[in-house]
Image: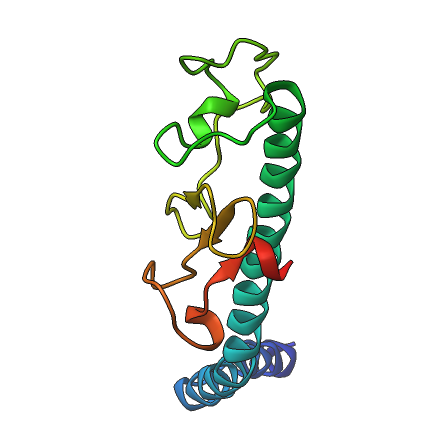
Length: 147
């Protein structure tokens, strides 16, 4: 009987992890995270760019509906708020043309609207992650005329 008690005590000592084993596991997890994280962040950036393109297309549809009713797009001064609130002089306004408030781009910035546009009847732009005109890759602008 005393021999079985001694054996069970040895088994209890073997059940836990040593500090070195825990450190090795933590290093392995850290290495795996450093390999996976950059890939995941690239996916997030790409998803935000796709969201901005989809929102620009949605806003373009609302702007086209406004034009059908009013024979013109909202002016730059009226802005896209004319899709939600009847602007002065829009006698045939049949809105609101957007069911909710005008969305901000995925990075929290306002879309830039210009009418008449330099590339069409109107220009609608998101400046991307940096919020500034121009840029490459993730910092590149997303434009209505490029959708």
